Image (cartoon, rainbow, N blue to C red):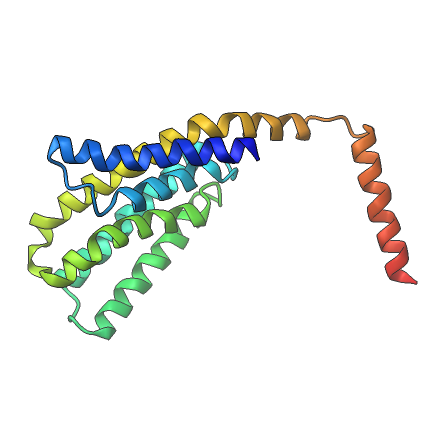
Length: 194
């Protein structure tokens, strides 16, 4: 519980810092600070594969979401069908990236990247689709900055938790905790069979 409170405090400080720092630097981080910080924290805190592979998945999903916006602006009609085709292309692209990596890149991390850009830019895009090349760089840079801040902050507090998980995995097979777990699961299977 202490670790959860520490992690939450560090991430809350990071989100607030993104807003205040963005304001001081003239960046428009206000509306994406919480979104970016939270999604960056997810990348750091989910213990699935290496951090580099999680970030690679995020980057791929982010790029695919931007490609989806480009398709919507340049090729697809501004209708439900056009949005459906763009959504299909983005999600299928995420699956293709993960398959091409032989599932080393976790598919969820690509969806986090998609969510980051769509959450930061969809409203602006809907208001002015023709301004994609002028408006999207602002959304891209601001949400990436906030996500990087969340990733770094969460990585600082995630290290002790991942160290504990590594020690648990490195525990010898015949340790009392492992033997007790095996005995309990054997007991439950036996009772279930009766």
